[in-house]
Amino acid sequence: MEKIRMTTPIVEMDGDEMTRILWKMIKDDLLLPYIDLKTEYYDLGLEHRNETNDQVTVDSAMATKKYKVAVKCATITPNAARMEEYDLKEMWKSPNGTIRAILDGTVFRAPIVVKGIEPCVKNWKKPITIARHAYGDVYRGVEMKIPAAGKVELVYTAEDGSQTKELVHTFDGPGIVQGTHNLSKSIESFARSCFTYALDTKQDLWFATKDTISKKYDHTFKDIFQEIFDAEYAEKFKEAGIEYFYTLIDDAVARVMKSEGGYIWACKNYDGDVMSDMVSSAFGSLAMMTSVLVSPEGYYEYEAAHGTVQRHYYKHLKGEETSTNSVATIFAWTGALRKRGELDGNKELMEFADRLEKATIDTIEAGEMTKDLALITTIENPTVLNSEEFIKAIAKRL
Image (cartoon, rainbow, N blue to C red):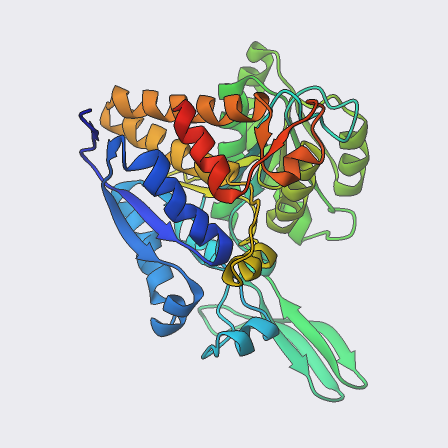
């Protein structure tokens, strides 16, 4: 069989732990037999990030600007325990945060809906798409441990040398402090991405912050969204028969639980991180969600929205069997291949991505699945497959 040819590479960002193992299986069994796969490879495994002082992460993001399409494996964001485990030079920042800061744009995450995997929230009838702002806030935060009594101030020094100060807190003993920021330009891009995506998919758009408490920071998000909507999108939304709805984040959470779904929920960076995990888990599994970063400049980065499955990786290292769900990682590849095909006018590549997604869903709906899905499926007597068997079962259908 002649393999499908590619003209332009995809930027390939390899990752860590169990997802790195799955990454290789997916390539070997589902991609390389059918595609003359062209990628520009970057090893974003924690050890290599440490060796390169995290320069490899920056390089992978710059390559995405060049080639416009990237696919990323899940990666470790180190904490104190990982510092010791991997003997790191420093506690490197989230690779996702670094890449998103360079590419800007919005992360859209939606559950992969499969028959036999019913949402935990019984009234959710349609998928809920989370639109997550991909810049700033705690992901670009600067933090300090305060050792003893003293004063912390927020200081803005203008280009002319004049200063504006705000007292953060007068400490009477040890504590902690964090500074976060955002950019009006990035918030504007976020708003336009969300409004455009809502029009493209004919879905209502919700947006929520905590502007009653954060009267400058969060309120700026609210104001920018409203100004852009009124000036550029109000008439278009009316013509399309869809709605833009703003509310407080706590009210949005309450409303989401009682809704039927079928809308886009735009969230600030941290809210989107948390809520996308809640939505994906409630729809079935953290491994059953698509995730794509869409930049206003036309860059696309596809990834799995979950972590590196550390517990399974340690079992794998001991030679024990694992049953790890690879669906989100497969869909990261199909999303990137489809977009590459679309940009290059490569219909064969786009059709292959469709077939691989169908083979994956058909495998689950036929009752062959990983343990996480078998525990929640309504399909009677499902066959529980290990990590490799599940990918082989998809390959058989493909």
